[in-house]
Length: 95
Image (cartoon, rainbow, N blue to C red; front, side):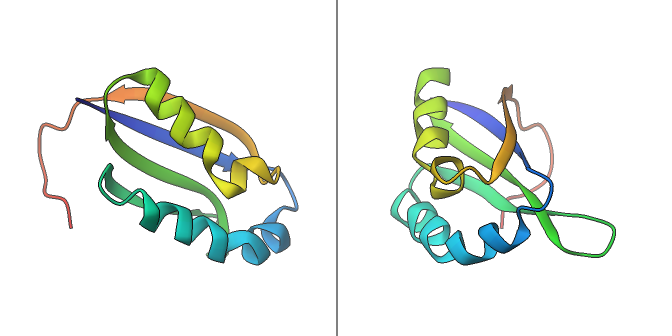
């Protein structure tokens, strides 16, 4: 198993869509809780959500990509970009 960080940036003006789809997104995350190591929204200068940071522990990058593709935010065009990177936790604690 390996850790992958998903850095997801919303399209400009996507906040309303994000908020309307958020219950589906949260349900998706909860249904995949066994692989989640950390997740939460990115915030702009006003404190509005404008992206997501998700760390998953999965078999490989293909599994991280499959998880990302299944996210309702991705399926409904909220994200402008999703950057998936291998991640090595060296310090800190997970909540």
